Structure formats: structure tokens, C-alpha cells
Length: 230
Image 1 (tube, rainbow, N blue to C red):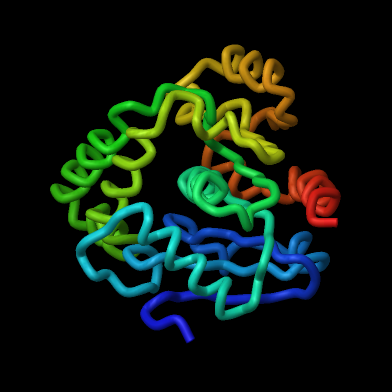
Image 2: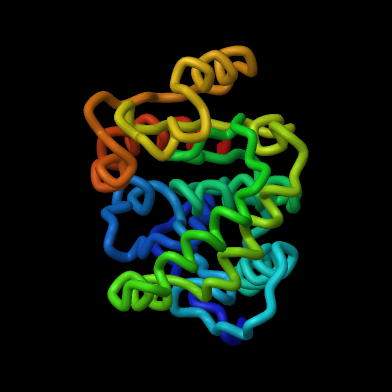
């Protein structure tokens, strides 16, 4: 039994792994996934309810998730996530041959991500001066873990998140200012079209709104995952 790592498993069938970093997936309706697949949600140490040892590396985050999958005898899976959790889903594919496909929403996969660790440190420093914001950060993750996560992502080669050797699908809200702050929607569409990566841009939704309305994209994402899991 993995110690210090929070995880849950629900549903039956081929496995879909959902990293829990800054989203509490237990509060999100994932029934379109759990109706067809075995959905394993895992918080690596430093995030969510898992232990916070204080020292972190991406290799440790991946190893924590893989340890849970070893315990559950999961040999292969697709990875699913949104925003930071979606990046972790892609990062799993870069590290593990178990991942057969990735569905990552709410993140511009072809953007220049240099400096992401510095941005995380700046966000954490700003939050420290607001007691409510800081309490929310600490309830979500160890700030040091988030900084280590984004430092790793910043060190990846440009387009490493998009140029996978496995199928990749993405989606975002057309009013997502966070996505647009990295890359214009036109550039993102062009990059994805050039790579043949399927995507959906949902009108009228910003970053948080898209997370609240996953029901708008989950049916098509589930069908896509099923093709690759079968």
C-alpha cells in the first residue's frame, strides 16, 4: 500500500489516470469517465491531501503516481487533466511508457514555458501577503512543490509537451485569458493544426468556467480516450 500518497479509484474498465495537483477532482463530476473507465485520481506528495515532505523533484511526482499504479496492477493507461493537472498528465507520458494517450485541457501546449518556475514563485510571494490567499495556497499544495513542478516544465525543450510520440487531445475556453497570456488563440490553433492534434475551443468560457463546464467536452473526450484504450 503506497504510504503518504492520497489516491482514489472508481469505475471499471481500462484505466484513466487523473493527477490531482491544484484541482480537487472529488468535487468535479467525472461520471462520463467513471461510467466507462476505471478512473484513478492520484495526488503526488506535496499536493492535495498527500504528505508534504518539503523536498521535491518531477521524478518524485511521477514515481508517486506510478507507485499507486503498481499497487493497482495498472499496466497501461490514458492520462487526463486540466490546466496544471493536464501538464502533469503530459509529463507522465514523457516519463512513462505506460501512457498510451493524453487528454490535456486548459493549457497552451506549444507556448514558450521558460520562466514558469519564476512565475510560480512570484504568485506564491504575492499570496503570502494576503492571509486568505495564502491559506488557500497551503490547502491546495506545498508552494515549494509547485515551484519544483514548474521549474521542471520550464526546463523542457520548446514544444516538448506537444511533440509527444503518443496521441494527444486538448481543449480550452475561448475567453481563457490565462491561455492567451502565453500564446494567442490563433497561434495555438495554427500550432495544433500543424501537428494534427485534435482540439475544441469552447465559446464564452474563461479558464475557471471551462473547468466548471467540463460536461461540454467530456463526451467527445471520452469517445476519443476509448479509441486509444481499446
